Image 1 (cartoon, each protein chain N blue to C red):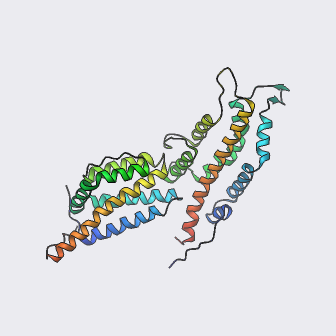
Image 2: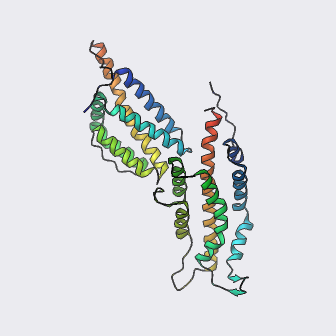
Image 3: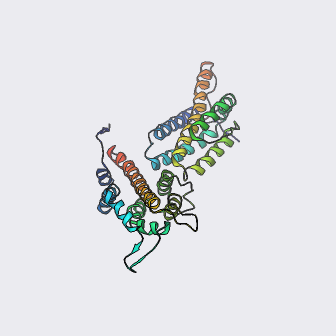
Amino acid sequence: MSEVIQTPIDITELLTLTGRSRVLTEKVKRCYALVTNPKTFEGVAASLRGYDAASGGWFIPHATHARQVIQPIIQECVVEPLTMVATGNDAHSLVTLAEFADMLGVDVDVRAVSLQDIIELKLSSCLPQGDGKKPPAYADLVNATSNCLREIVTKALLALEHVGAAIAFTSRRGE
Amino acid sequence: MAYELHYSSRDALISELKRVINGLMSTTINLQLAHDYAVLGFNTAIKLMGDINVQKSYMNYCQIGNKLLARNVKENTGVDFTFTCDLKTDLDNIMQVYYSLIFRKPKTARYFAMVMLNMILNAAYATQRERRKEQEQGQNPGEEI
């Protein structure tokens, strides 16, 4: 008879138990630290102030700039880890992507879209676009960008945790 | 077209369906596993669907309870499901709805599969009661397939 172990499991243990690579484990830890650190969002606000150090000129920040600012974090903390666990068009990968999209409130059939599409749809709905002529207010753009980034990364980590939990529970039962 | 399963085969399938539903109930976090259970559950339900006794039992259960069952489905999943009370047609529709949900709203799909498979299980359970009655009356419990 298999013994059910009732002790709590943390994310690192989950990923280790599932045989996930050290790269993924470290990535998840780093990304969790990133979205819970206020300095990350201070950095986003600073990047959106409108000064381009490369050209030495000022620009009016809008949603496109916000996307550029958060793109590296999304690449590292959402696209790369999720691609590692949802590797193809198999049912399990699609269910994981569907769960991620559903958590973000993006209503799509994941058989027809990619992970990148899901992120783009979410960004389109959570970043202020301005009204064509008038760009969004700086404070609104910073708040929306920070909230959007925090939500996308947190939900990705949650989806990863669920995948890890699934396999960890199975392995603990000795199946 | 239908067949009559031997009662031991039917009982085994009923047990398997029960196992799958228990599995679905325990997969609130693990949606990948939930999908596996749902697929296996549908396979089992398809086999049970061919049994004439299960078909009749389902029709009786559905004709009496379809409005309440539909309400139960609607309240818990938001899905408007219309029962025809023909097991083959309904199972076809159930799978169609499931596959339209699983890659869009997997949590809803899981719950929908759980409720619907449980309904088919309830119908199949009734055949066991019928068989016991027949046995008490000394009738043939069914031919083996």
